[in-house]
Image (cartoon, rainbow, N blue to C red; front, top):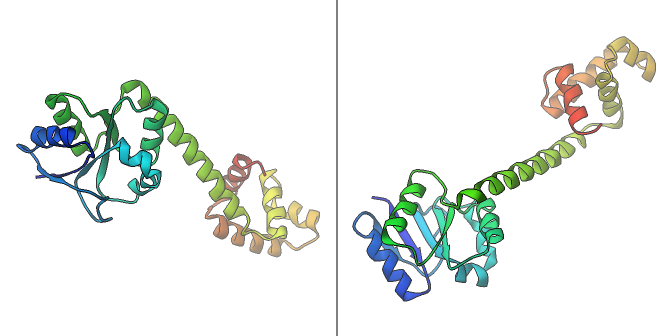
Length: 203
C-alpha cells in the first residue's frame, strides 16, 4: 500500500483528502518535509511553498513524489514547480473521484497537470537540458591545452595528421599524441565525433 503524506495547512481540506484516500492508501498527516529516503506520495499545499519557496529545490532530491495542491495557483508557477521536480498540481477543492485519479496517476509514474501545460513543461526541460549540456561541453573543452585545442580545430576542418603537423610545425607523432589526449579528455572516440562536438559548441 503506497503511503500518502498530507502536508496541507487547511484542516477542512486536509480532512477531505484523508477521507478520500484512506480506503485505498496508508494516509498520514505531516508538518514538515519528510527525510530524503522517504517513499510514497507527498501532497503539499501552495501556502507552504509561498512561505518557503526553497522547498521546491528539494523535490528533485527526494525519492517521494510531490503533488502540489492549491487554489487557482498561476500556470507559470505550476510549470516552474514541475520543472523543479514536482509530479503534478491540482486544486484543493476537487471531488473525491478526481483526488483518487490524481494520486493513482502519480502512483503509476505519470504527472498530473492540465494537458495544455504539459508541452510547456517539456519545452522548458528540453531548453534547460540543452543549457546544461552546453555548460558541460564548455567544462570539457577547458580541459584541453592551447595546443590540443589547435589540433582539435584542425581536425574539425578535415585536415589529416600530416597537414596538421606541417601547419603547427610539430611531428605527426606529436599530433597523434595530442589526439589521444583530446579523445580521452572529451570522451570522444573518433575524428568525426570530434568535429561534430566542436561544431555543436561553435569552436
